[in-house]
Image 1 (cartoon, rainbow, N blue to C red):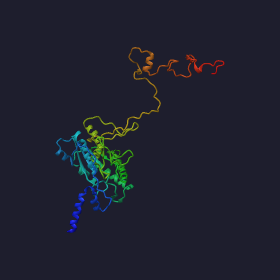
Image 2: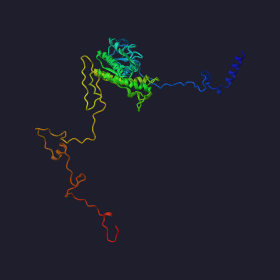
Image 3: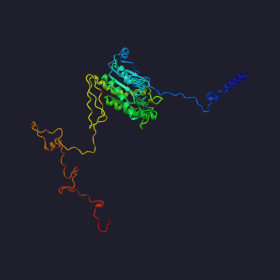
Image 4: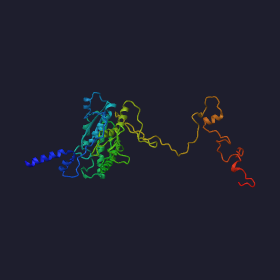
Length: 398
């Protein structure tokens, strides 16, 4: 009891000199670490308060039951947690500008194409699509697939040739079953990651995803450049869609913040808008990723299938600055070959210059006469005899 009273008395004495006390003395004693500092509060990046938030539904039937405005365009998203985020980003993108669009998702956390025993995307694809109204399908899978893959012949390590063959086959089988809906399929590639090893593995998987998607006639959406800096490294914060620098990636270096998922969805959003516009009778989009030397392949569309949005050109035709000029010919006003209706006569010099495009001959001796050597008939201009041009006189030094 005496010891307790002594402690209370010392505490009261300390309170009288509270302004001299160390505010972290108690925390240091608890952690038994002399240089411990209390954790600082992390202030999140300011987010726009008026950012619209859309609803993501579990199915098209749920969307029809809960929506006040009937939907005419249905987007179905497949994948893992990243697919959850891109679905929410698409819902936020269309909530105000295109209220006729409904976004639903069929996602499974920690899933992929490798562990079919955990979640078999290939086997479950038909049942997931059975009763869904679909205008376009968006897929984002693969970040959980960096692990050995098993088949009837054994277990194959990641990054081996057999692993790549089996993995690509599963991706292709899944996309082929999605094509039963006869709608465009957009497979979104994975972005850069904070972990360099994980980021390198993602590049390898993206190559397989892009190859198999294009093989079955789908559309691969590359989002890599949107989440790296000028040197190609991982970018946690960067320009958002509102033009401000914001935090785009979560603290784990894999997932996205709200501005990040909105930017991620923007890469698919612009392709979907072109698809929706084509449904309203808009002119077909301009082909993309083609050059004047290449012709886009003609893809046949099965009966009843909605044509997918065509690609847009990366740049216009290339104009050479070093090639010689074309052979001069008649201008737009020249008469075509054959008999022509009688017209008022034109001055021969004007017709030669304005119609045939032949420049008038320069007048000899004029400033625009650049012939060399000049004719003998060209008048020679005499230089004034002044200064150092004057001949020296006898007895006078030059």
